[in-house]
Image (cartoon, rainbow, N blue to C red; front, side, top):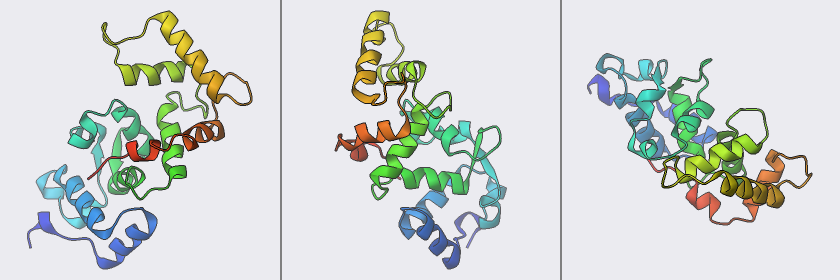
Length: 191
């Protein structure tokens, strides 16, 4: 076998399967996809488990390219100090959380972190504004007017901010998501 087709050991594969929501086949596919982003000389198993891939390279994957939250997704799943690259295990975590098998609680936890643009543990008005802009686009023809944005954010807070502190915390977010049965089916990335 050439270095680019080396396989993960059975022990490591079993460990990854126990730690993720992925099947062995999905883990092997994720490893191949990750390894394909590496320079040819680093595509052996040992290097692929040790090196990191830049966020820029990760964002070239078709699964992320069209996602309006692609940069936030990479930032949330990166364990690098600057949050600018992903290890194979970061990559595996990303695909695990977005898999069909991940629980609604896990999906909503990570969705909350992705939508928390300032990483302060709450969704405030500015986070909600950025969230809406990601969903609608910031172009002239799709961007909401100032008054439309203000009204939408007020409606979101009215519906979601149970303790009326002007922000949405994780439990409030999960409460809202629990009433949206299609959330978990739409919060996925397929390998």
